[in-house]
Amino acid sequence: MTKVIFRSATAGEFTVHVEPGVSLMHAAVQAGIDGIVADCGGQCQCATCHVYVEEAYADLLPAMSEDEDDMLEITASERTDRSRLSCQLVVDKHIDEVVVELPERQR
Amino acid sequence: MSADVGRPRSVVIVGAGHAGFTVASELRVEGYDGEITLLDEHGQLPYQRPPLSKAYLNGDLSADRLPFRSEGYYARARIDFRGDEGVTGIDRDAKTVTTAAGRTFGYDALVLATGAAAIRPPFFVPGLIGLIELRTAQDADRLIRAMGRIKRVVVVGGGFIGLEVACAARKHDLAVDLVEMQPRVMSRVVGQTVSRYALEAHRAIGINVHLGARVTRVEHRDGRAYGVILDSGEFLPSDAIVLGLGIRPRTGLAEAVGLAVDNGVVVNEFLETSDPAISAIGDCCSFPYPYGDQRVRLESVQNATDQARNVAKRLTGNRTPYCDVPWFWSDQGGMKLQIAGAAIDDDREVVLGDRTTGRFSVLRFYGDRLVCGESVNSTGDHVSLRTLVAHGTDPGVVTQLADPETADLRQLARTLRHPSS
Image (tube, rainbow over all chains, first blue to last red; front, top):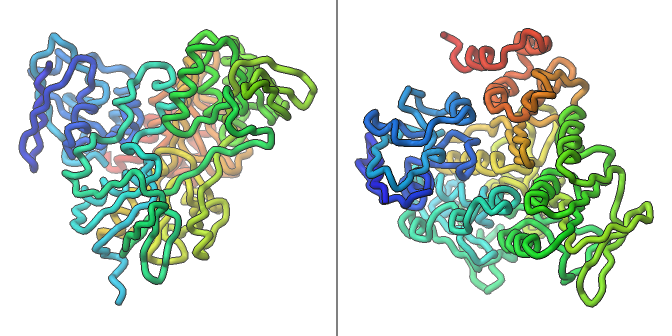
């Protein structure tokens, strides 16, 4: 299980234990974390599952595809080099922990 | 005594599909503190529809990933979700709705998100084994079970659902015949270029596409279908027949209480019906199209969720006309099709990129307006086109896009999004 910490500037911190093969987006919506919207349900179409991955964990996660890179153009909050779409961040058993920051808004 | 409909103390939502669910969740996101009642008739947790003809059908998504939220979410968000309360009537004077179970729910604001039903053709035979519609998760489960057992399938309808199902069936190694009434596939929704490209791609993977053909009869024996007869007289044997003939909006509740209905429940640019306390959104409503001169009814997740968001904002005091650019996606085998805008009328197409590479976009113009962009395996283009279609009447934009040799969608879109940079 991967321990994932979602940090929000306004709402504190949420910790979720995520099974291998599950995306951070899916784990967040199932846990009821409000800062992830996921309109398209994880199809990399809506850019409303945006997160900022803390630097130390960036390399642990799956590489960014061209589609994800394209979709990140239209996030509601500013895109930085730590920006990822959490529907594409699927954890595996080798990842112990990931920390991400939630953006100010998804829409 | 009437409450201020702009600041309701109670909101009742009829239908918990993409539109209905999103109104409920977005009301809380917008800080709404009153009562939210979300009524549905399907008897299960609200769930997503697109995967039913895509990843779920292909076996790439498990059933537990379909619901929008886990069961615990509704209690936490103080959303009174009731999955077994199909609404049968509205009393506009008393401001209540009544359900099939005989319960009544009072509202200050009512949102109709009743969606649409699969169109049933004249040849439909109720209860026939092997005749399958695709609208709900139960339908998808029936189809998956069938595909696991059978060798041949006939798909009726060459729209998005029909083509997605046909591709999934080929992935299951079934023999596939697809029957489309019009001379081209996806004729209601894409232009000639993409239509032709899709036809060739689908034929190349072995889908037998019959254009300009119509099913007149389902052949059956002992309650089980074994093929179809076309209007040409041709018989197509099959173990299952999947219907993808489109949907019709569910407007019965609105009609029964005298709300205007015309290709859906009629709403204004604020998504209000002729009754100021009642809104209608998603597949069931027709509204003034913000990028054209007509009323439209759009069938997409984007339309459902963005309209839901607009209503949630209005009900929390933030009233703005609905003007989101429509967008849509369809996964058909190896072809990822994305559309920005809606070409209700168009008169020319400009192709950007090389069709032989399988990655290209088609810009559709109507007069001097960019009305729609269709992208095949080009998410970058599509993302840009969402912005460009919003500026489709800007003469500078249209001029720059008219020349496929020099058009730079990304650059132009970025400039429009950040005019100061």
